[in-house]
Structure formats: structure tokens, C-alpha cells
Image (cartoon, rainbow, N blue to C red; front, side):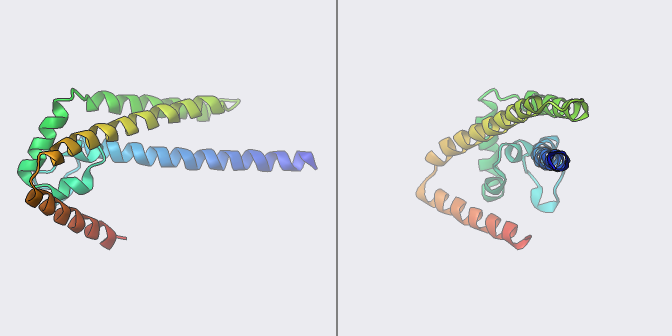
Length: 162
């Protein structure tokens, strides 16, 4: 009986790993696509792939063109190297690919690669959030109200797509 259970456990581990890989690839794809800069249509005029890569998509839509430019300047002043961050995510994904092909499978290698990728994504978001918060602190009450209105519109747009 234990021989019958072993293949099932192995199968579920592979399924779980494949699902985890798919999720990480989706995150990396979203970041990569945002950084590379798919156009996104007419409402993306003046948009910034860097803002999307930093997890600021709803705010990108909510900010005025001038505020987006100011935010990009704040982010650029941090010295953030998006290309290097993308490369690190790519290296992590290549390590996952090699581990998936290896026999025997080395779970620790995949866990470490996922952790590196996750660290990069969290770091990108922290940089974006810090820059946005610094900018919001400089806004007047009316400007914050306009940002809140724009954010509400952006969230309704996203909710309408579901």
C-alpha cells in the first residue's frame, strides 16, 4: 500500500510546484511586461511602465500627467535599476527551470529561487510606495481629494473588467 501512496504524493508535489511556478511566472511576466512597456491603449498616453512595475498601476491612472512625471522623478532619484531587478527575476526563473529538469528534483533550489524573486518584487513595491507617499505628503487637501477621486475611478474600471 505504501508503494501506491508514494506516486500520488509525488504527483501532488509536482502539481503544487507547477502551480507555484505558474504564479511566480505570472508575477514576473506582469513586472516584465510593465517594464518593457506594452502600450496599453489610448488611456495609457503618458503612462509609465516603471510605475506599473512598482505596483502603482491604480495610482498611475489616478495621478495627473504632471504628478506622474513628478513621481517618476522621485523614483529615478532613488537610483533604482529596474533592468537589474528584471535580470535578477530572470536569473531566479532560469534556476527554477533547471531545477524542474533535474533528477532528482531539488526543492530547496526552487524555494531559494522563489524567495529571491519575491524579495525583488517586494523591494520594487516598497520603493514605489515610499516615493508615492512622499509625493502625497506634498499635496494640498484638494489635490489629495482629486487623487482619491481618480483612485476610485481606477478601481471601478478594474472591478468592471471582472
